Image 1 (cartoon, rainbow, N blue to C red):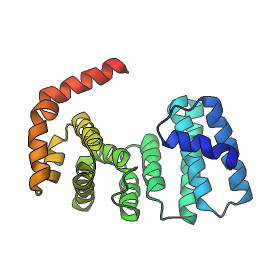
Image 2: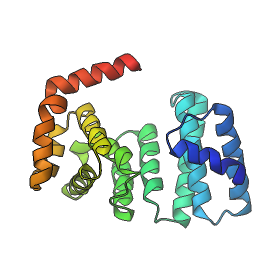
Image 3: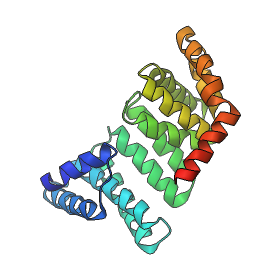
Length: 215
């Protein structure tokens, strides 16, 4: 595992990792799984690496489809042996979504991510982004979980407030953030003061256009 651990760490920190290094990390974790297949975390980490490689290869390409299938198998195998992994459940839900679309299985897998780890700082941006893309398909229980995380994350830092504003703008779900902060006087005041500068329909459109130009 050791040759790939640092590479995976860099990936999780949001750093750019080359294809060659991803391949090195994949081989490292494949060896770890072969030596200790009963430890679920090695398999779920391998599944993450395969998921990233599938996205880089193109999900619709033959290589991408193969890597995506391998990722789903690895994540499922690892979670069967270590189910208390909210990160892995969220990754499995996203992998299933890439393969199958917005199915009931995707929703239920995402639900398990919330049930095994609510208010996980490092997971909240990814999980919120994914959940808002499926918002109309979520039941009240899951919507409440999203709102609870928004309430919590809004208070943690200005950087996290900016992250949330960007996410809700991207999905036209500013009203969800508004609902999340309305019960807290200080949070509501912050939201109201920032709304006209960042969250109006016009400002959200400007943000989307700027992101499109960068991409």
